[in-house]
Image (cartoon, rainbow, N blue to C red; front, side, top):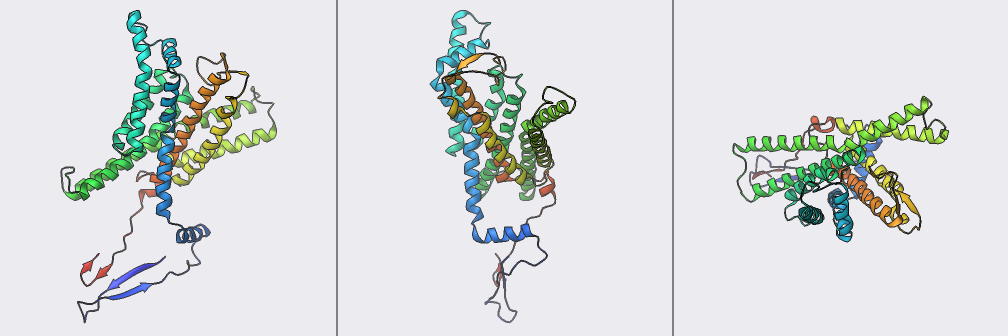
Length: 365
């Protein structure tokens, strides 16, 4: 690892002597992983990779909101009929009832579109995050899916990713305000810095815990299935290879989720879970395949419609929603990869920033 040391000889205060320590090979005591990391950093501009990762995660996490706004727009009458079927406005007079049910899809479109645009255009990303957090919180209840625990917890996971993104945006806004000489929090600079760091770490911690919500659900669900298999339940006749693979996936899921919660190697665990969720979205919700089918399908993944047979188009429309919801979960995990777990974690609890200071005859740079 190369560094530069500048020092001034005592005999000549106006001149400086530049001593450059050239890059040396990593010492033998460094592990293979550290040697590989040094080699990668020497060949790849990690700042550019990090910026691209942030942009990619930002697009993914708002993907479900973009798709849902477009979906509602293209099937406006169907969405209004859905509002009627779930019972919105039933206590109102007939005329007002129909007006409310017809107006609600417009609110859905406007809310999600505004939130997405505020984030992607960087006009007001903090406001955009808050808008989408609020929408993700009420969305399951708007469609009477509060009993669909997987759907509910996946929304909580997306909220966790949005909170991590909000933390980053707040930090950027604070830096820009300080650089422009704007006012900040009352108190000395040291007190302001400490207050902002505490707020950031608390928000990151809350986001990290919420991020794990759906994975805790998957872990519990798969554990129950494994116990049922051992006790002779409905899946006790499954293929042994399939059983071993399911057990392996369960162990990885439990360990990865637990490590993210306590903050040990959380970036790597989040990256692994993001890859798994991306593959699972392609496997579980292949809307791009079923949309061309002439068969009818059961909406077995929508609470209240498990035995309802629908045509391929309507089935694929629902599958597409869940597909993009899982992609937004991937984006939420990548937010953790990009921004880190914060100080309330084992990874960063004792971390100290190391600053290399250049000393010249004019002082420290």
